[in-house]
Length: 304
Image (cartoon, rainbow, N blue to C red; front, top):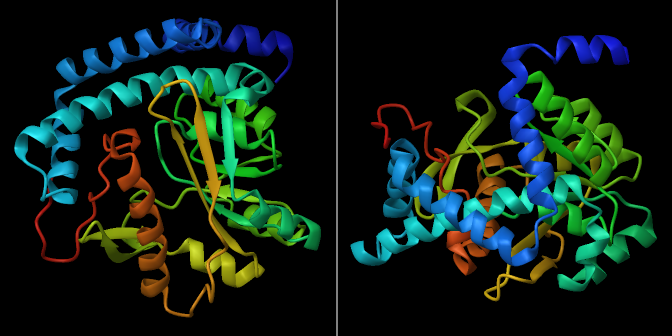
């Protein structure tokens, strides 16, 4: 698409909301830090009050995953989750629109030696990311230390898809469509790292059922398949905003041993266990707003 075609096509009124959203993200990325936090908290609290459907999903997820908590504590955690994800919108804007170098002083990175060893050996790693509210900012911060491609879901709006893909391509080496398995395999075999988040429900055909917080959850089988096809080590990456709300911690865990095992359910169970342990450290920062348990085993009723 030429520059003139681009301007004409995306000038249509149906794209005006997307332009407003992009403009808001660019503006939000440059706000002072305290104002970002205050605005993000305000957005989160507004959504908590008004987004009843998402609040119901969040309440259901937390009731299923944390039955040991009192109703009062779970209600507090629902509110905290919306606040964290509201702040996450500003963090995403920052990750997409600004040079991550300006945040280097805010990052503590643990376990770098695990990835450094693989880099010396010339191996590409399959990086297991997690859908925390800090996901995209975490990717930007990670790029300060190690290069990586990223697997992503294309956005339905073509204008926002263009903006998002260009932003992520600046952070990552390549932005790879989640349906492009060959692209993932090709990059890993060439020695590139690939960031991949397997903690969403992609439907019965793409998943096996494995426990997640004690609940049978549709879990993508692609993690073990990619590892088997490429021989790439599987590296869990944990990242979160610290309690001071000003600094961040990234941490590589050692590569999963004896993975894949040849048993897709066992492999999915191991990956879910790693993700669950990371979430339990900062549960409010996880994306509980999505329907993690949407697909149920045959004969089981839905939760939502």
